Length: 253
Image 1: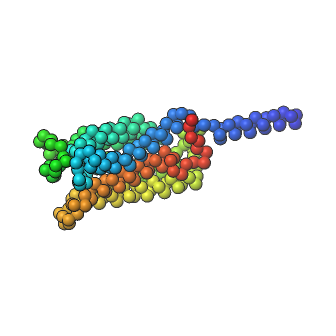
Image 2 (image 1 turned 180 degrees about the vertical axis):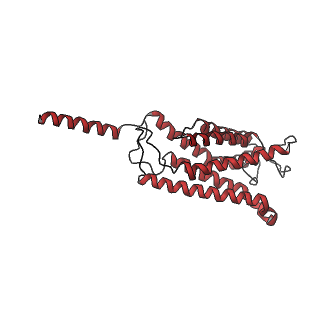
C-alpha cells in the first residue's frame, strides 16, 4: 500500500513538472514573434525614411511629416512598411473580440495611410517626386486614416494590452504577476506618450502653426509622429515579452 501511494505521488509530481516546464507550442511562439515584428516596424520606419531620403534621394531637410515621404524616393518603402503592419494586424488574433476588432480596424486605417497620399504643402522642394494633381478629398481621407490609426495604437496600449487574460497554453485565468505588472507600466507610459504626442500634433495643425510660424522649420509633426511610432513599437515589443518576460517563458527552438 505504501509503495502504491509513493508511485502515485511520483507520477503526479512528474506530470506537474512536465506541465510547468513544457515548451510553448510553436503557434504561441509565433504570436510573440508577430508582436515583436510589429514593434520593430513601428520603431524603424521613421529612421529608414529619414536615412534613405537623405542618402539616396537628395533630401537635405527633414520632411514636414512621415507621410510626406510618400512623395520622395522612399515612397515604396513607406507603402511597403505600412502594408506589412496592415498584414500583421489583420492576421493578429488577441484574446477576445475587442483585440480582433482593433486589429481589423487598424489594418483598414493603416492601408488608408499607405494608399491615400497626403497633400504636399511645399511641392517645390527639389527632393520631392513630381506628382499629378490630387483631389483635395484624398488628402483629407489620409489625415482621417492617420488619426484613426494612431487612436487604435493608443487603444492597444492603454486598454487592451494591460488586461489580464487566460494563459494561451493552459486556458486558465492568469493572475497578474510581477512581470505582468511591470509590462503594464510600460503600456501605460507608452500609451500616455502617444496620446500627448497625438494631441500636440492636432493642436499644431489646427492653430499652433499659425500662432507660432517659426515652429515650421523644426518639423514638429514629423518628430511627434516619430515619438508615437517609437512608443507604439516599444509597447508591442513589450507585449511580445522582449522586455519583462514571464519567469516561465521559454524561447522556442
